[in-house]
Amino acid sequence: MSYLLPHLDSGWAVDQAILSEEDRVVVIRFGHDYDPTCMVMDEVLCSVAPLTANYAVYYLVDITEVPDFNTMYELYDPCTVMFFFRNKHIMVDLGTGNNNKINWALRDKQEFIDIVETVYVGAKKGKGLVISPKDYSTKYKY
Image 1 (cartoon, helix red, strand yellow):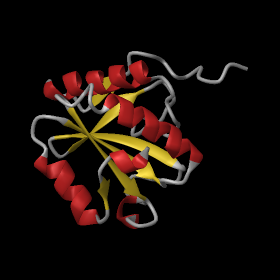
Image 2 (image 1 turned 90 degrees about the vertical axis):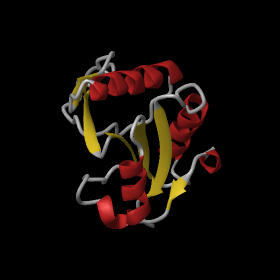
Image 3 (image 1 turned 30 degrees about the vertical axis):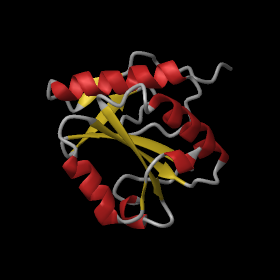
Image 4 (image 1 turned 180 degrees about the horizontal axis):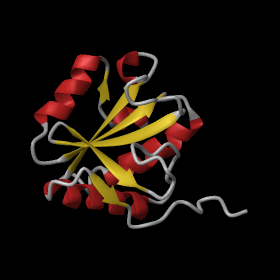
């Protein structure tokens, strides 16, 4: 499904995508198109993109092709989703301890729409950290 979303193939293109968007949240998935986790996440991103087009725009970045952000954003996971608004990184408190990014594949489309909506509303109010509508601290039930 990754072929349905725009790919950014350089650090400059990533910067321009973040800088040029004034009124919408920029959602960037860092990872590889062939990774199974990214494939699941890409399917969710493709399905929610038309539903959230008024307040979010989605891009994919290959972390091998564009290694510029790997150390800056600590992109060591196979799939990472980050949010930006008006050239500012928006952190999301998901209850996992890592507020910078989502580093697993969300399978539920409505959950992802809720997160993007929360990021948009919080970012419009000038907040740099928003609280997720769902707590993912107990994602794995032992």
